[in-house]
Amino acid sequence: MTIVATGSMSLVDLSDARQLQAFIGSSQQRQVIYNPNGGAYSPNYATTNNVLTPQLFIAGNNTDIASQAKSIKWFYQTNSSGNYTEITASDTTYTLGTGSVKTLTIKSNVLASNNSMTYMAEIVYTDPGTGFDVTTKAEYEIIKVTNGSNGTNGTNAIMAVLSNESANVPADANGTVSSYGGAATTISIFNGATDDTANWTITQALSGISGTASGTPSNRTFTTTGMSADVGTVTFTATRSGFATITKIFTVNKTKGGANATSYWLSQSVSAIQMNISKAYTPSSITFSAFAQTGAGTPSAYAGKFVIAESTDGSTFTDKYTSASNESTKVYTPTAQATSAIKAVRVRLYQAGVTPSATNFIDEQIIPIVADGQTGQAGADAVTAVVWTPEGNVVRNSTGTVKAHVDVYKGANQVTGTAFKWYYQDPSATTSSGGDSDGGNGWRLMKDAATANGVTGYTTDTITILASAIPSVESFKCVVTYGGVKYSDVCTVTDVSDPYVVTIVGTNTFKNGQGTVTLTAKVFQAGVEVDAAGTMFTYSWSLYDANGVKNTTWNTTGSKTGKTITVAASDVNARGNVVCDLDKA
Image 1 (cartoon, rainbow, N blue to C red):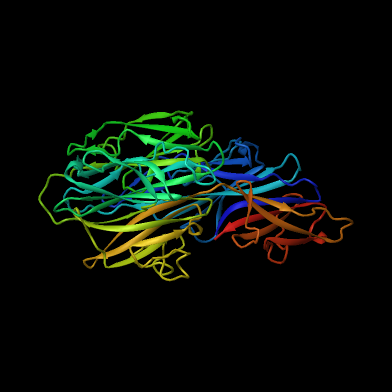
Image 2: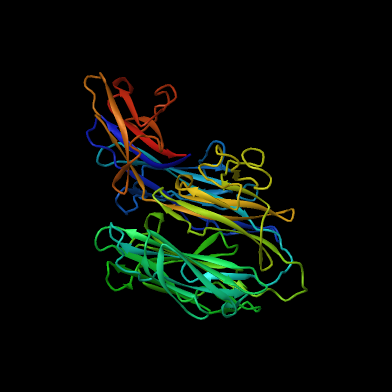
């Protein structure tokens, strides 16, 4: 269960308490990479400390008020299970800050004997408008990711890359598109680090979309000119004698809205970075640009916020650059291979004028680094499993679906797996409870409808993931069998959601210590009430006295559940504060 929103009401006082949102910032990445080939951790918190900083905001205001907190306590939980343990004093593992914002410094390699660690900041804030103490919490989890052992060299990989995987076009409420600017893509095929596109025959299959094909060879580029459906796709099929057939899908979505809708998108100077055998890049840097177009107007540069990250495994990314101020272009030079063996560069565009977060995310592009294989003795073709999301990896506001698909390659040739297992990441799952030895600890096996969390196709090469199965960010693993050997890969999908705001409605006064009041928690997202029936979330209520101390005997267990509850006058001594935590399974 994950707390996605909290609401509270002061009883006796006619004013509701302010809605608070708490976060935890960190000075280091939360994924620690462990390399079993050399026994190294990156980063190693023992040598590069990770400083956790609590942040506190009033809903609707971007000013951090953590320095105004009455108290801040830190707790930790090992491997995402069991009770939280409070950190009461500095020791060889942790240092508690002494400033107005009480930080926590992790100064030892806490993942040397654990797969994950979860830290919780409990913040007590005195609302100046009501005089009540409001308690809110934030969690931060660090995870150990273990690289695989070195294998034998193989032949060059054949990789197809679209310059634009997907595009959004503005449309009115009736679906009439005002502009197809930016809705174009070009396919490139690499043999190792060499652009091999000229040697392939390319065809295009259109669904719900129309446009023009161009480029060399023929059909390499597609430019959208019309759409007959809300979502249109162009399937590129590339063939060459002696090689496996390659398919890539370009998706165009109508973004329906009112008049003068504005679309935003990212553009990059190259679709892939080539690395030769000497580990030199071509080109040596990439230019990222952001654009915006309002209605049928002319596209123009958009000054937003860039966050650029690098990955050494193709799935886990580490942020390397964040815009300090609004900018429309950024020239970025990837880390040299001699320093870090990166495999891809990811750029994300966020709205202007705010701190980048999931609530203001706009667009994303991933630029792979394609490389020639190292010179060496000829060996057997490597077998690789690749899990990818052909229709994109983002849903919004818990609606829609995404698909994850696994391909198996033997050398440059695509082959067919004989059995498929799918898992979703769950820190509480173990190989003996919820998972198995193929998935490993932290991965829950989807084996039937009861364990699939709404996901379908979990015994095939493609699963369909409902938005309800994505709490915010979720990772899925596939273990595929080929030739009697099992291979695996992971993909990550994201629910880019507006925050939930909980408002408690009902009478909040008693007279002469008599009677009861009925309180209902209403949930809003993007200004619209959701879960009116009370079935999407679990509502957990707690009662605090005038000093901010929780009543642990209220309703016998110290809490109540349900969208609507009653509070008796006998439960409150003079005044109190009732808090509703919103949990999503």
